[in-house]
Length: 136
Length: 136
Image (cartoon, rainbow over all chains, first blue to last red; front, side, top):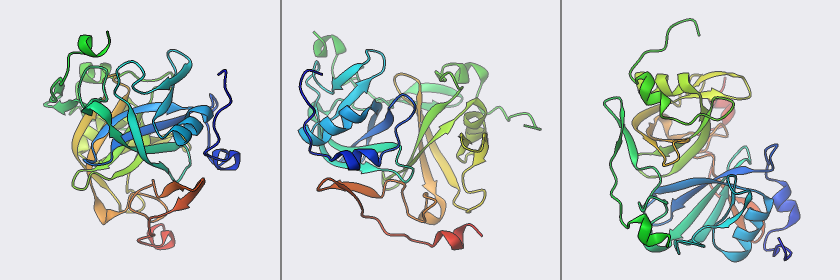
């Protein structure tokens, strides 16, 4: 990070979160209007601070080892309506407005588009937009 | 485990799940009727197989290092209506009927009872039943 993290969330409030040995917590994104669970990702301290400060979901990409402003490539920004913390203080729940109605990189509303049916993972949700059109 | 795991889910279906280096995936439990996110826990291969076979949520307790049939002490069993897998195949979503309407060990419906408000984690959900009455 080149710039200091905005401080819409106090250090003491961040200190109440139980970060894992890698400095991360899991974060669940839920559509605030429909209740649909959109995705699960990871946050470090900076990601949570930025999410609170900017009002949009910012995650930590473990594969790319960098902060990831959800929607920075796709435009599918998550506007944050509420940030919740669980009883063990190691899971964050974001209630969001999903811009474009698509959270998944496959072009679906939700990443949870496979259901266990008769012992197989079956795809049950449609692709709303071709990923080639999303990531150009 | 003393007994073999019932096989309502095939080995090849379990093989499609991407288990982390500890052999675990995160599992989110969502109330199937209200959409409320109840809790997040962990599953190993046996936990997922048992969940599918028994139709109730079975997790892996990292603190106790053993299988944990949700509700075994509290009676707050989660009857599983649907099992979903995410795009990266490393998060399970259970849509459940929450027996007793309480998922959290604090006696609340959901573990996500704290909301970030004016820079503080504020408890916003009521205790429905005293934990001392739940865990006797």
